[in-house]
Length: 123
View 1 (tube, rainbow, N blue to C red):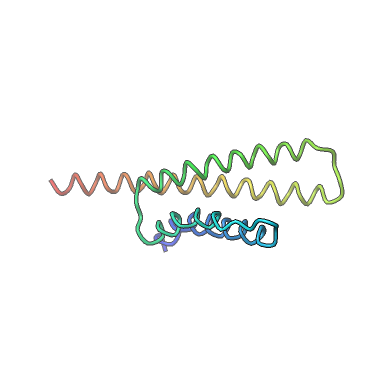
View 2 (view 1 turned 90 degrees about the vertical axis):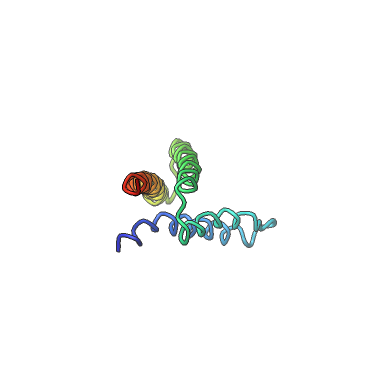
């Protein structure tokens, strides 16, 4: 069970990437390059690397901060119909992104401690 909980952030970001791809699928320029961002997250599901977890956490953290700033700028606009629904769904989405970034970094730090402990025991 603990092994699967460490993989939840990776699965979450893979799902978000596919959702973004599916959302842009019927646009004038459907970009397959968005799917390339899913490759490192999928790699982490099978081969857990400390440095890659740190890089993915940093990139996802920047993305979450950018999304938070976009959310705040949308909240500053005048209210229109469906504004309350947007505020609730968008706010929960932003908070969930920050939670997943936190879990990525938490897993990264726990993995680093485990590796150092194993290294210490071998000598």
